Length: 62
Image 1 (cartoon, rainbow, N blue to C red):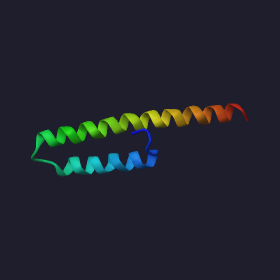
Image 2 (tube, rainbow, N blue to C red):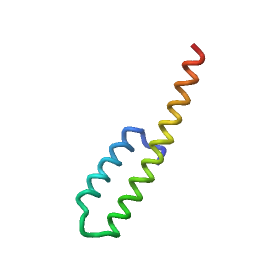
Image 3 (tube, rainbow, N blue to C red):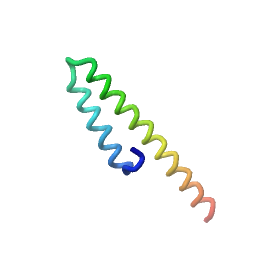
Image 4 (tube, helix red, strand yellow):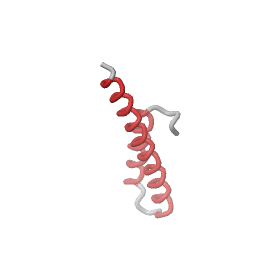
């Protein structure tokens, strides 16, 4: 999902977490939602690392 913007991925994680909070009866569904949210979280973390590296390059070149 790296083709989506940071904001889109962040919004999706928020939606998944809300869905997880509402899903109190079905454990299998809760686990699937958690896995999706966790995968997106990892992608967001990677995106932030890329942005940080770009900012460091820009700051070094000034």
